[in-house]
Length: 168
Image 1 (spheres, helix red, strand yellow):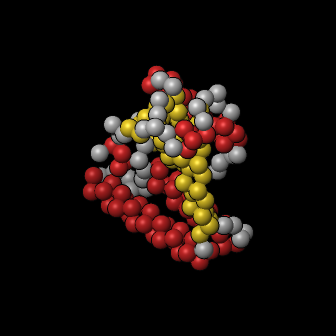
Image 2 (cartoon, helix red, strand yellow):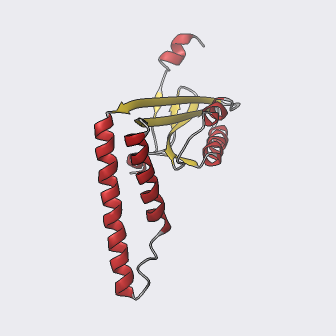
Image 3 (spheres, rainbow, N blue to C red):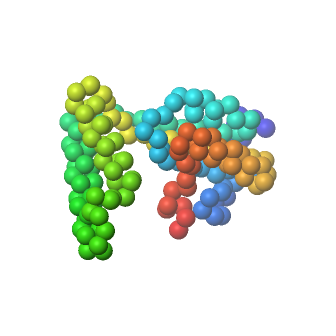
């Protein structure tokens, strides 16, 4: 094979929502859903240390400071609204209104901490798209590579997902 074969393969096949074929190789692309409040660069090193063909693509865009603060304030307002709705449901059902879903409490405190960091510590907010493409010589090898990549993501409290539009 020459460099031309990798730049312009002989064929592309997109038969289903999660796998594709480029020439004779099988592949699948996933985006990283970040669930952890902080990420270590060690995760990227672990992806790149995989003993398989993997392509990692990161697209990072800085968000204007004023827009970032407005966005976080809007999210805090949305979370407070959801908290009030949950409290109303609890009162109607006869439960203690101080008991709210733990994710609402967690997201609310994290959003307030982020707002404080943006306003007082001159932190910056970024939009990031992290894509991992796995390749394999066979479908079975591809599935093994995807399983390994998903376990790396899980180790850092993240998940690898296929976009919802691909599942339609």
